[in-house]
Length: 339
Image (cartoon, rainbow, N blue to C red; front, side):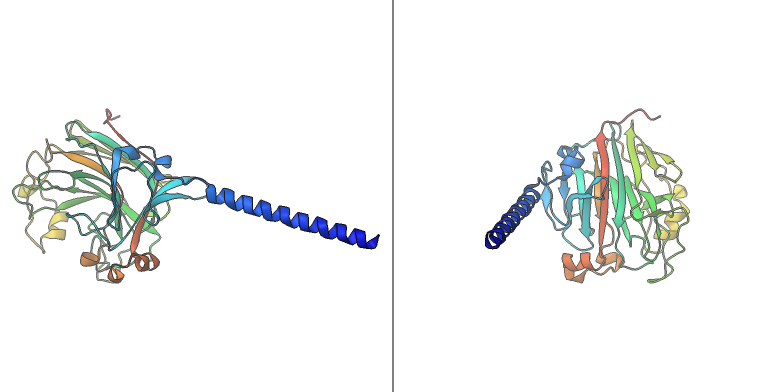
């Protein structure tokens, strides 16, 4: 009797272990078979864009496309986000020294026709290597308007920048003139949103300026709206706990068409390095443009002297030489009548 009972217990134990193993195997199989979530599942406008990644990968069909370590989906415990990540040194476009994992709009338009781009994002990382007295160090561009003819300059670049050791960073936007004549005298005029503008930098290679009092921290959400309507660019920036900031800028009539109109900021930033030009009177009127969005890393090794580890992307990611931007919402489409 005791022997039979002992055998029965052993048999029950074996069955139980087998069932548990099957459950574990089934659970693992379910996890393995779980469908991949693509950026186009989170932000469904991806059919209207192409992308260049920080390793030089180009893709013009983004529906159902992702690439680990560059362009993929993360969940922060509450929300799915599209991640754009790029090293300080990689393979980039023919017109830039800066790497990017950045969307480029397929549709092109002239300012008189216009268009509208929105985004809600948080910057998770900017390069922690580089020289503090170089304006583009520690910064990433998270939205652009880019010209596709003439000088191929940029009427809009929206930046986030944070110095090492600071809690708060700055959001600002730059307007690059559509230079009269050749492009040797081109310049960017910078306007602060929260924190500093582009011209504020360290006193030397290792000394940062004071931390901005009204800045945006890494991981803090903010939104922008770029509405180009009948040649006028209307910008709106919002973030919880911060004042909503709006700007208006003509893209068809220049504010910088004479030497007398060149702001002091430009003289201070550029005059010691090279001659400063003027803009053609009609600015970008009639010129083909398009939107860009993502992570356009400004911390290249050439100008900012950031660490690039011989271009080794794994080492750059491990040692802070990269930019990472997360978007949870974005739209692109026709312009709207400004409110």
